Image 1 (cartoon, rainbow, N blue to C red):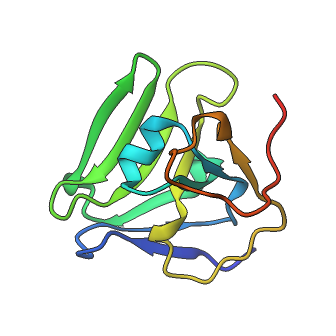
Image 2: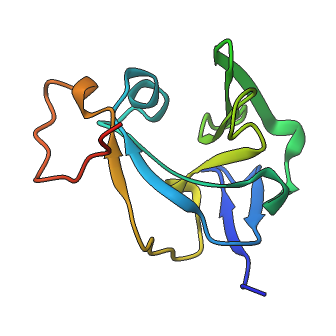
Length: 133
């Protein structure tokens, strides 16, 4: 078994572990991810929901429905973006983890930039590999 990856919010009210490494690592440039992260893009890795364990602070996690099928979760104490997930479709049983919340070092094997057509006009990305769907 892989050693769990540890994560937490800025104030440490919420802590969690992933029992496998994040997959499908992406840096999303859509306006919702930019606003949720307060940055040029949001960086996420996904895992099956059953592989995420909230160790502390489940009562500090607030859910916001950013669209009819997408829920974004954050810490009510410090505001840290933690997770997002879909309620319908092929990946409804997966959850995406904000990679900046990981406390355990993590180097993805692959990563991609998505929704670059929505990139912030003030962000000049270096040469990036994009998803073509």
